[in-house]
Length: 306
Image (cartoon, rainbow, N blue to C red; front, side):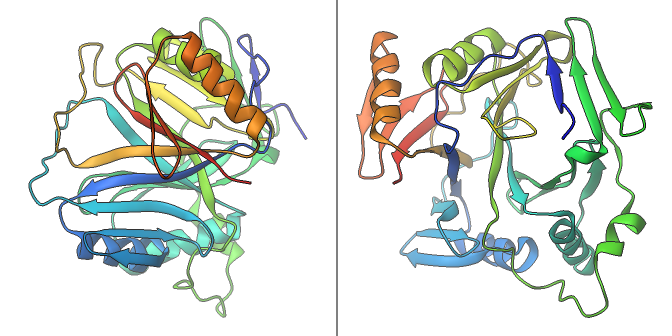
């Protein structure tokens, strides 16, 4: 396998390689409409619904949860979630997902990042979603202090984001493939991309305190990212594209309420909580896990999943 990211900022992870992102919990204005969109258009399944809450996924653990609050408002210039990325197991499933979007004439932006192929869309309440498949065999990214260089598998330099060749992608499907089939059960939350107001503070929190592997610090692009062993692209990324004066939206706000990191052993949990305590950060114990707040107010739920 080629080197996907060749970066001057790489460092080891303090978390176990089997650490994974869990569900993103959203505050929504119309629960039924969101359920309809995520099941029909995106391809998730409704796992449960109780009162003003619901959980959806691909048949195993929840990937999204919703809590309806009809008084909540959208604040466009606030920090918070840029997008949640659903990582599909292969290009065929990405082809199926994009074909489903086109069958409903739902606006989306198929994009080729070389090391991944993807499409972006917004749900009816303005939350951005990415659907992607890893394609490490297609090339590499290299990050230096001054630039990001992307090369395809033939060594030719290319832009970091180009239009996805849909004609080539759709060769993955046959006339017998059902494009309305739900997402496969091994679909996961591949990464979370956040709006923040300080790259350095966010990197300290996610790499030094939570323990993700420091991947890239790219001030030129107003972006940084962290990863975990075994992932081709970032797992938690963050940018200052809303500006360094951006602030957390007042409650109640539409959008991400919190997101989950699934820790898979007690030692990891104890070590993370120790680093959080040493940093002087407050935590709240809930029935789902330990809640901690990142430097810009994003709620992070640390869950133990064994």
